Image 1 (spheres, rainbow, N blue to C red):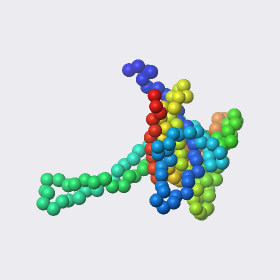
Image 2: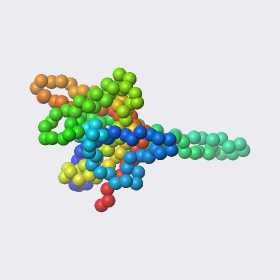
Image 3: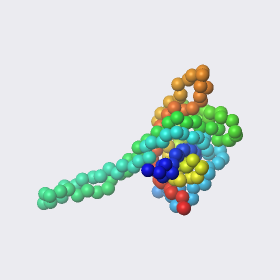
Length: 182
């Protein structure tokens, strides 16, 4: 198989403050909108990771047994279940940007605010950019109303000097895929 058919990808993520939910007005980020690079005070951080898993939706199928129909059951669509996103071996940078490789402490503060009982809990929508080796966006995944479920820091080693996050797990309430126009 030709190696050009199997390109290497990198994953970048941005966390943006979720809008407050109002009854009857819930709308998934990016529904019918073009996806722009998030900026401003509502950005918790931007980061890059080597691995991303959990981009999946599972439909809860309800089975009904209809009286008199003995050769099968009726199946109906139920609620969607969204797997938590797991990002591995990466780092979030300060939202302000800059060329330095300084870690963003806001992610840890977000987790601690939830643990310390801050209410309402800050929710963040996320945009995951799947980029090819030439930095072209090949796909964009958008998740809604994320909560920090797990943060795992690196194994500290004085020889390597790494500041990366070993693993970040985000529970969320919605997932959408956007493929850019060719």
